[in-house]
Image (cartoon, rainbow over all chains, first blue to last red; front, side, top):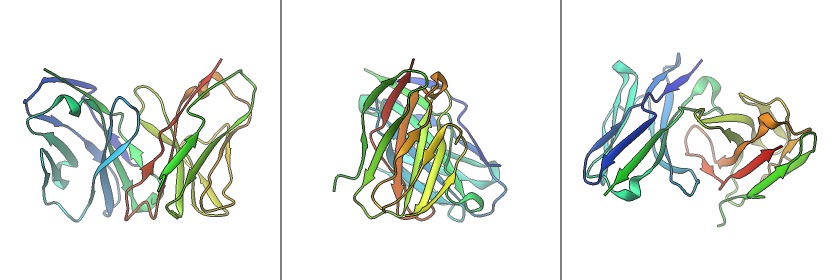
Length: 115
Length: 113
């Protein structure tokens, strides 16, 4: 069965610090997809990134970057020069083709960015 | 496009009452799903549908029913509410959960007393 572990329950940083959110996954499939979602205090879920298991290239989008490493089953998310607006709960999720319709979420990491 | 809409936003029920949470999308997505979010547990899949007339169970289906008579709508029914069903419920839709991200509705906060 698939599993997603976000060991960091809560992280607090001061604005402009860099912060990395960890995500470790388990799956028996060779083809799978990984996602990150953001849930700001308003409560909605916002899609950030989708990555398939065959694409291990790191990705950068503005202040956000993602490091996918199959060797360690990790898909970590880094925010550079954090801002107060980055304060949210961040969820990592896994979808494997064996159970193609089921997205398995981690328990989330609450990020608090203060001035 | 309104995206994914959910009604109501908040609901309080007494134990044993039944109700239906509404979910609609206007993006012509075939795939729709319901999740519940509980503190410290992330989101867990309740039921999902890959198209009109087709539904299946997720991780935590007990106590909930769904049906999908149209592409647009995917209501979630609580048959006899229990305090354990106090949660925030999210509906999501996608063209395909494999190749596309899921779009989430704003959520319904349900309290069962």
